[in-house]
Image (cartoon, rainbow, N blue to C red; front, top):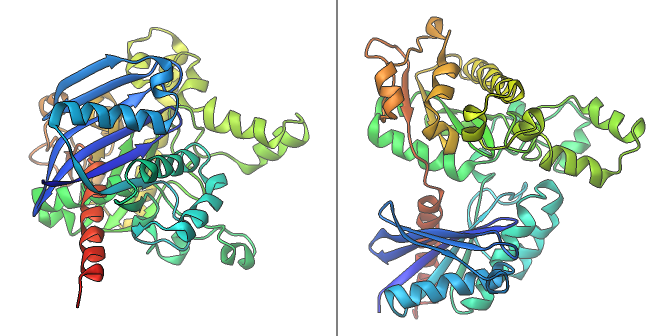
Length: 399
């Protein structure tokens, strides 16, 4: 029986998955998600980009990550037949100071990652809940954690620290950066498409419900818009992005908000949703005729443009700009507005290519090449998982 690798990305109300055949080269079989856990759960499955299943489930059938994983495996067994899951790769948002590369999970590493939950409250607890569900479902499989922070761990010191007393840095209060699994994939894809640009000065913009930007030189992250937590930098679907820390002091001191109330405000009630009062979905904002929706888009674009200038300064120039993420890959108007007025930098889009969402959307005469590269975090996770699975098998092999 062919052995497979399963990747999981467990969120607060969803669990995304992808199944890969592990026969020398990784071959994606299917991908999908169960969303709306415990409320209105829905199973979506795609195969080769086409919808394969779209089922509404009973709330009790997918009330948590464990039961949702059973739904996924039942579907896979019924559709593909009995499967042998050799390893499960997990997206884990925060690896802290310790984890600069993917690891095979054990009790010690799991406990260390649980301690980091306050640094990524929207993600870390749910990522680890997915791990527990997978351990129960596949007790003999290798469980691998792949970290969004790992890609940034070789930052230069000035991009890694805050102007706080030095002991704070030693205690782990520093800029970690996130979306590293996405950046890693895009860097690899860009190297295949345009190796000259990939070896130079690149800014990648991961724009979606979560949003960040990364300055990359020769494939290495040297600056990120996100910092200690996934709140910093660009405005996001429901997260505020860059904020004067004095605002937090005011909220707690003058408005008497509790830490939990502040967390809820900054993580869940701000960003595009808070600014517009309409939605956290860019598609709905672009379709809305409310002035607040337009203002939210204006603010989003302005912050992306500011960050592009900052990233270019970090790199001392720019050779390529790449868009990825749900907004970056699909919202051509946002890409157009981000690049407007940067002709002095050598940025110029081909209008027709941009609207069509082609891979290369820069004008032929432009000095800076601009790309749209659909990200694939699942493939990044699967590659790391396959590598660590092979390592574990060699270690267990008889001498």
